[in-house]
Amino acid sequence: MNLEAAIPCGLLINELVTNSLKHAFYNDKSGEICIQLHQEQQEKNYLTIRDNDIGMPANFDWKNSSSLWFKLMRILSKQLKAEIEFDGGVRVQ
Image 1: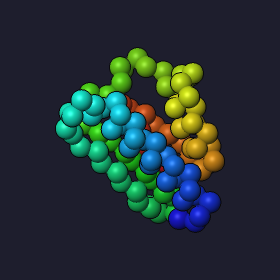
Image 2: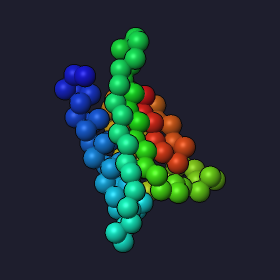
Image 3: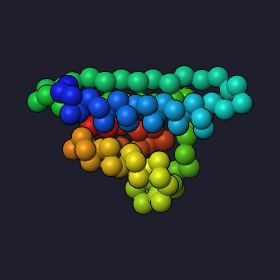
């Protein structure tokens, strides 16, 4: 991964892990956070971050959320020319 991609990717990882620690595992609640970064054929990089908390409500529309955090996720993914999938977890491609 080149430096132009590594910086926003690192920021995404930091934001997503911090968000999990802040919202999923508050009040000394324990859990797991899984971070996977791999490269498949055609040199596409895949970043997957999951935690084992209950997640967001199924009807939550994160793409149209006015939350600063979700706006930041959209901006960073745009810098990476990436797509974000959110299924209670986030996958960036």
